[in-house]
Image (cartoon, rainbow, N blue to C red):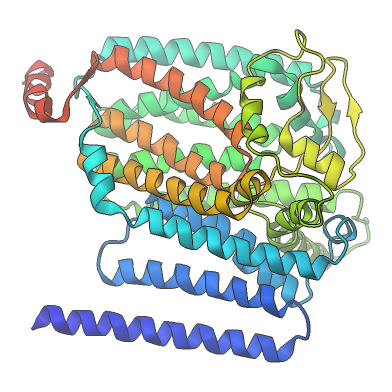
Length: 498
């Protein structure tokens, strides 16, 4: 009886939420004369997301760090809220609009394709029973933790990462003058031209998460916080908000699963640090060259707020519907043929240093910026292109390669893989090594959703190879799930004081 009442309450609340959102949609349609279809698609996307989230909350099944929530974050802002922002006439980016003929038509089309991609993703993600079967058959690392090996790996990665960080900062022309607003964003171009040296700061992030096994489960160590701050140096210096967010998010996910509780105070603290840091980077980049000494504090605050809002909804961050509109404008009128998978094959060329292959294909985000947005570019002494890249997101790249069929098949598979990832941590949430793997993987769910495949895959594969090989040494190898309980008992007996 109680269960029936609970179900009726959930249904009633969801119906009320749908009615409220539909009323907002109707009001918006009556208020505007253009972008009606993109507004409708954006609202429908947000309605579906809201229903999915509210249903899980009311059913007491909501998990803040479930992969679907990171997918919602990228699509909800990039397609949902940005679509409404465009429809209401606030989007005035000359870069985004001027390069697309018939802007309204292609934004409308992109919005509906984005809605299709989200629905197919949810269809794949809903295959929970099948995902659980697959996850239960994937081997798991032994629960054993070799402390001495762990500290050796942490020391090695921290030293190499720190040396690489110093080289990167020096090679990018560091000086106190270079910290001026005009030069802050330009440091990111060294990520494209720096080769393997540009990936070395990631080793500090891996060291942080490995040390977190000790810090969160056994003995707290001040070294953990020192390494975490060092891991944040390069993202802040290069003005990379995504990297900064990913590092702290991975730590927060690991903390939550290690402690088996949702840390409200920690989340508020970390959230404030990340938000303030990211906002500062946005404001510095958005306000450069526009301030005057006589401007009031109120005027500065208003422009700072507008800079943050415009950057979040008026820029190209996350899964951008406007970037998709640019790609559609190139593909739909047959100005350019479909790629038929060629954009995914560029991952084969990425490991080759540009010094060995001067004509190596450019980053896909750079190609979009140059060919579709017609942004000015230059070459540095290493032969790498220097341009503010605009990477296509997953839905756009799938369409660009295989049209609508690519969106349907690709997003279904992506949703199913995300569900396997979540079922794997549910089955092995007591395994400290699995927690590390999951904490990094969840950040890549967000990155894969909002970036091009080759660019993200390169970082993901490199990070996973380093992480998994380290865990193999620390744990002593992998075992089948059916033998895990016995290995857990053996590991408990080996602990000091057992």
